[in-house]
Image 1 (cartoon, rainbow, N blue to C red):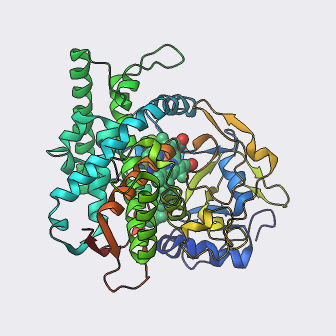
Image 2: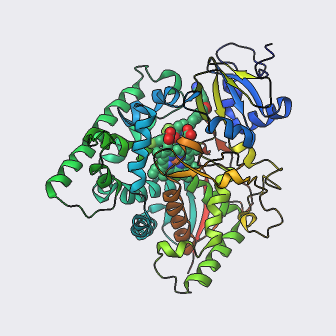
Image 3: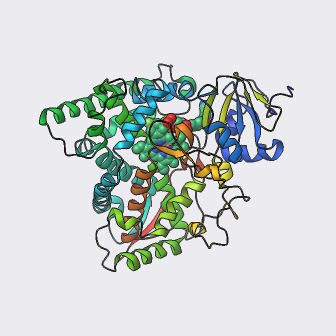
Length: 478
Ligand code: HEM
Ligand SMILES: N#Cc1ccc(COc2ccc(/C=C/c3ccc(C(F)(F)[C@](O)(Cn4cnnn4)c4ccc(F)cc4F)nc3)cc2)cc1
């Protein structure tokens, strides 16, 4: 027992260590060990000593770690590069990733969002009109499947452009599925293995990348330059060293954005629908909110309307508090890291794991943490969040892709923090708020058994999501 290292979680076998108990239910694993050891402890994950540091201080220690101390690409590249393609995100130096995030973020503007809201609304309405699962006056539906469809159509049409959207009706859907099978945590270990799903993944990656590169050529030949989608911005971007972004990097960034947007949004939108079904009273409050703020005739939704619907906005915030798609953020340790306020020095033989979700369900910050109550985000709510907001939190810092808040010592970080912070937060909110508002217009929702229960979480995949099948009862509003 080394006094300079955090306490080690007991385990029977080497390599396996605590992988199974952690992998089955990470939040429970964190909570149990936090009770035993406090905010910082080490466990063995797939043979690697992994030091967890939870709470706002832990979030800041890991997410605001210096480039010389913590490294992200070393850990994630085995998982992401075979899926996205080479030379982008974690297959290049961090400085290049910062420039790539700047390019991607440039396209995510208010003007773009204004054009995205009608696109997303129409895609939701068309899906609900056409889908066999929503025929008739009422019924039961596996909501995860519907949300996966709705998010791929809405994200591809808005973020990726209409050519790509239309290809999802043909070959792209199956190719996307093959690519997706390679996006699994088991590949942290077996990414190299010539397993059947890895061969399908590689074939799908090459084929999808080619579809994007052909689309880029078609657009260049046509000389169109009016679109506000991300592909156009990437086609007209150059790195600081003057080099234009190569076509294969554009294609690979588009795949990365498709994967990011799809998994996070389909998981979150499924949880939103499941939570709404457990609270039919909230569904009716959302409907009333639209009638009162937009008019009883419910005109077509606009981007500006979204800020007139505070309860609708709070739905996403509260759902992400309890159902963050990314439950564990990993970093490699590159130089020994002394932990302020303790005698610990984290050695380079360890990985670091930030679990921001732990403080998001800590009663010290969120009274009655396990209660899904969107109205808690109203200022006068008796169970309002008790956030730490020190003055440094208001300070901002720019890593090369825009200003992000300096302090990561917040108890609520579903989009991460620091240099690797998410750039998709605004898009995700526009997409999720629009989907929620459009579904509420058409349906009353409740659980099949009329209870207020919510299904358990599947942590086996890369993004935590509802266990399948997740059925709910819908009823068309007359
Ligand atoms: C509910 C939706 C989403 C959630 C909860 C979410 C969450 C996160 C988190 C926690 C990180 C930090 C990862 C780390 O530090 O290792 C992150 C990074 C990122 N996300 Fe998202 N994300 C969402 C949607 C999106 C969307 C829609 C896009 C693209 C349009 C996107 C693109 C990215 C990118 C490019 C990064 C940067 C990774 C890095 O710098 O290493 N995300 N996201
Ligand atoms: N055996 C076994 C076994 C082992 C372990 C376990 C459980 O252990 C763990 C541990 C850690 C993790 C981490 C999740 C993780 C990390 C990175 C990414 C990402 F990089 F992909 C992403 O951030 C995703 N993203 C961002 N925003 N939206 N999506 C991203 C970034 C940029 C980008 F452009 C595209 C992106 F999409 N995705 C997910 C998951 C499970 C179970 C079983």
